[in-house]
Amino acid sequence: DSPEFDLLFENAFDQWVASTASEKCTFFQVLHHTCQRYLTDKKPEFINCQSKIMGGNSILHSAADSVTSAVQKASQALNERGERLGRAEEKTEELKNSAQQFAETAHKV
Image (cartoon, rainbow, N blue to C red; front, side, top):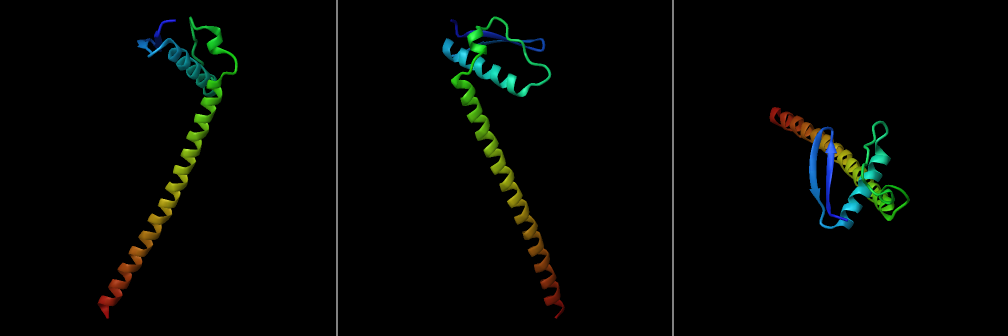
């Protein structure tokens, strides 16, 4: 139950230290759940991890789902805001062109 652990990513070796052994377990649960959920082709191999960390429905799974849901909602809100800003930008350009045409016509008169 040490807070220290090693990670190997495609021939890169990193030594990590969590604040506590419990936080290390939490990290691995979230990492494992995320890999299982989003990686379809090549899933990482978890070696020397307790099976209870990797299996079962934990509170972390629902927490990860909640975080994913929140991120998706925030992303959707940002996309909608971007679309509104784009429409506002287009309207501003139209108003600018209209003002320029008005100024040119007024200058001719």
